[in-house]
Length: 362
Image (tube, rainbow, N blue to C red; front, side):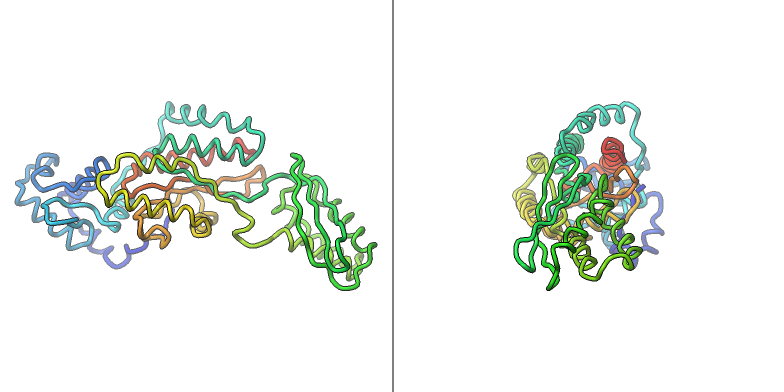
């Protein structure tokens, strides 16, 4: 189910593969203790937890080997150990059991997201879905979505100056969006009218993304029928819809307060403060989430595997969602501390993305 960039795992892969059952068991206990409490765990406690009868001294020997492999580290002079980011990645990739959600859990998520289908707009629906996802995972929930998923109804060109025009886009849901475009020199009013007629014959009922694809194909096929200036007006209209990569997207974040729960130390608070700063820097988050749009299923980024959250040491678990035509139109997921409950959050994000796709017509 999970797809990600296995950064940092290439070099030590052979060493990791050689971990015996005892080493894996001890390592698993260190990670699971960290995920549950956020605290370092020492050899004495581990010797009580593991199934194999081992003395604290024997556990310490194994811990020394795990530390040499880069899987665990000592945060300070205490005897306790915590998993490194490499260790967490290895745990998620190789040791963690990601089971499917139970029927009861599915029903719970489905009922909590049911209100999404009754929302007045796509944006309102996604905000409701995020609020529920944040509550389910106890993390901050995020979604990256096109600014307008609305289906188009009509387009109008209004000339402002000899070489500037206002493009008015009207959606089926009543939304109106205006954009100014530059006209080629010498364009007559007849070319603007003809361009509007050409576009209106082909955009109705389509989203901006679908309309762009349709119009680029139609324009290529109709070049012989349209004069050159009309073609330029149509091309300028299509180009004005594209905008910048980030301008055409919006980021919605819900559940910041969940990140303030269960803080254990001042350094935890500092990490959360840095994460809040990262979330305010929307361009970086948009770039990060955009990396999941080409993936099938869930993607996981742990700590410095993405430069954006390298200081706050956060993890991101995200999955794309689709429209009625089956096209990926956005990404939703959660951002939280590296000690997220991965085994629960991964299938929850995956299922929530599928539910949202279904409710939005995908």
